[in-house]
Image (tube, rainbow, N blue to C red; front, side, top):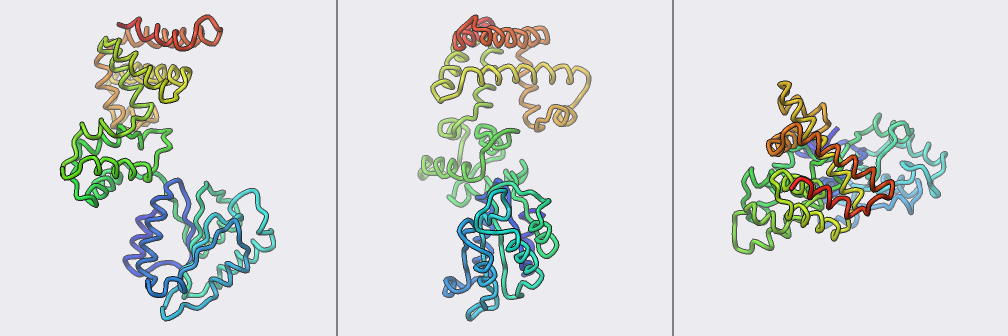
Length: 343
């Protein structure tokens, strides 16, 4: 189940009495829980009908007693338990026996209580408590949003500040923040902070431009590497060296930067060969584990290189890596020489 189905249940007044929310998008979890609380809990009686429980500092009796408490001057009561130890390997407050008692209690949860478990880590679906929640309630994964959903979310987020942003700028914002990158740890909270910063910078200006985004949004290492390789392809050695220096100043290690440059050239070489064989971006993307828009971006960059140059660049990266590992050359100097040989 995903968050959209929860919102649909909320809209149709069909909320289940038991939920487990988990996943890396805790910002989205918080927003959904706030929407639920606003809908089912009267603010005037919130202290009596809404109860938050820290799962690391509680026991089963406290949870059951909270659920058994009748709502005051209302039809429903909401109980939120965050990071209960049963969902993790190590625990000190909840014994196996207590966990068993809690899982059996789910079958008798009062109709007046909505019990929400929130886990900010990954879950092991083999655990008894998770199987019990799946049987008597609903489990909702809050994973990263899709590209399509992100476009809608960004548009809506800027509208909150009375700002306008076009589809092209949304794509650029996603690209430069790196949210959709395969190994990115960016989340919605990070993007919300960037949107807030951008809107503050705009002041009375309404429309967000690419220049605004370029000026303020932090670039991911993937984007910096893309720009560095772009500069190499255009034989702009000074800019490539400047980008390399900036990355070092931002705390990136030489070895990681070299790895990323090598990976970039490998992708470009593979994509160029696959395009030559007739593959479309849609067909290339799953084969390389990339998103389609990233493949299109790489295809555009690959136009700066021919196959021979890409093969040579990839070999030069591997040779540089070997020389560094064998202590034949200083890490920074080795990468600077790698960059300058294409100028």
